[in-house]
Amino acid sequence: MVAPGGYIKSAARVTTQQYENGDTCQETYMSGTSMASPLAAGSVALIRQYFTDGYYPLGIKNTQNAFQPTGALLKAVLINGASPMTGFNSDGIPLEPPPSCRQGWGRIHVAASIRLPTANHEMIVLQNESFTTTAQRKGVCFMVNGTEEALKATLTWYDPAPSVVSDGTIVNDLDMIVTFVTGKKQIWPILGHQDRVKQCQKNGMELTQERDILRAGHCLQNTNLAELCASDHRKNC
Image (cartoon, rainbow, N blue to C red; front, side, top):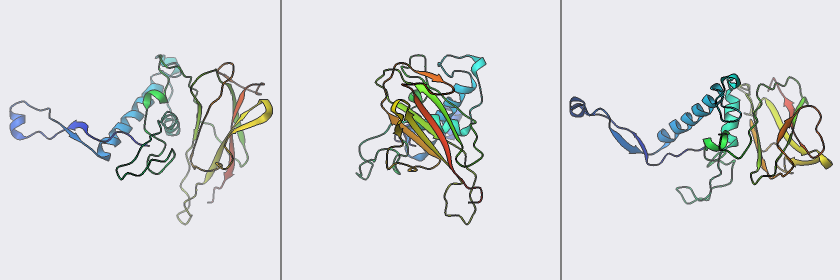
């Protein structure tokens, strides 16, 4: 992911004379990854506090809703709200749409990653879903209210380090499938996009249905099913 790193106000070195005169706060403008990295880290810290202080799911603090988010969940939330960038890089090369080697999943956008009281979108997070065997599947049913905003679903997971003699492939391969139950229409992955990204899968799609509510158990008509599948579990990779 990317964060602003150009012409960022930062702390500056204080000279001995300035210190003796009581001038202990100096500022300067700097650019580079040293500026972008703390902005990214601070964004993750704010999102973590959103969960640990109990602001999820409505953006209003309620300590009874507080919980400790995993690193994988924070990664998913950050990616889910990222804004795709357009234009050109410093060398004049056009930016490809995310995910790409030039912008990753896009620019960090905290307000779009979480739900605040003034937001016009819903937010649902699930964590600690574990898989133990190949072909194991888990799913959740939901309905989408008529809105101009796209439905976005992001899957991330922890993966153990492979063997030092491996080719660098991941050990556990999880796939996300999103289906419109009526007519069993698969809306993700798009044909040809299967297994395009490893250790993180994100989709964005336009859906308009009656209302937005999380349902458990069997999916009803006119609902959508987000299903996770352990398609490859290779412990000895």
